[in-house]
Image (cartoon, rainbow, N blue to C red; front, side):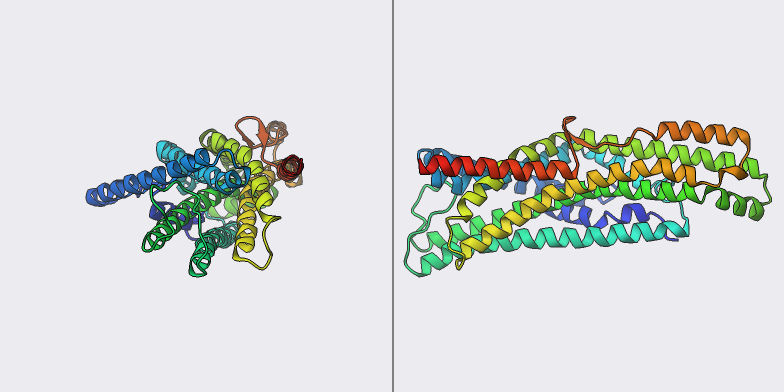
Length: 393
């Protein structure tokens, strides 16, 4: 079996993060490469800050017009979320590297042939969701710039969702502005979606390791007997060593899950807080759009992106809890009658330990569960209904 399969599950995500300037390149890289990448990170980050500042100024400029505020606010919140994630990722790079080192370690890569299927499934899902989220976001950004381009060709006035010190309807100002907006929104979208899928698949790695731990528990005695026969060692000693490794593996999974929560807890809280508002404002714009226009389908794609991002966190958080609850049952299914009395006592202590499930939360408050996803969608619709009724009145 190949080594470091756990780490390789996340390799495409890390590559995208480094391309986007959201995470540092490998510290073993040549010094010149590291310096150039740091400069690249700085330039892209400053450009993002300038763009988001222009959006904030635009919101202030049109603050007395609710419709125009809605046109800018949902993008402004999305981009502040992306910048917040990037700051956290860069500021806590050492802690994230600690997680990556664990994924390269022996407990997360035990070399059992039965484990390979879990890694293959995680890798496949990770690649599919990363590409789907990236491409969906980039297509949305393309449609956003295509719509004002069509209006401009038709001779109609266009308004970009950023503050500009000049008239953007005059050539070549329009084309330069359109290129600028498209480049920055696409870059921010690429960063945002990549970071979302990366954090979600750190949770997916927890789920995978819990599934592997369950597999090790179920086939513990059979594998211990095979190892004892193959190495001509005492069966009781083999059981003791393998069981110690099971406990250490569980401890490392708990540490891994707690570190994810500590590093990204604030990010997830902000994501959930603004997601309701973003969905509400997006729906507010969607219902007033003609289904035959580019604007309508760009908003549909955008809403799908937001729903996907939130659902990834809640789904994999829910899966972590579900897999941790399965450990108790897997331990009982072990063929423990073939082990010594002292091992049975150890097994009871272990089963008591795993009774408490792993419950990932955002900001130590909001549980990452499917119920949370439903609650966000419901609250978004309630807020939209309130805005709609207020607008009518």
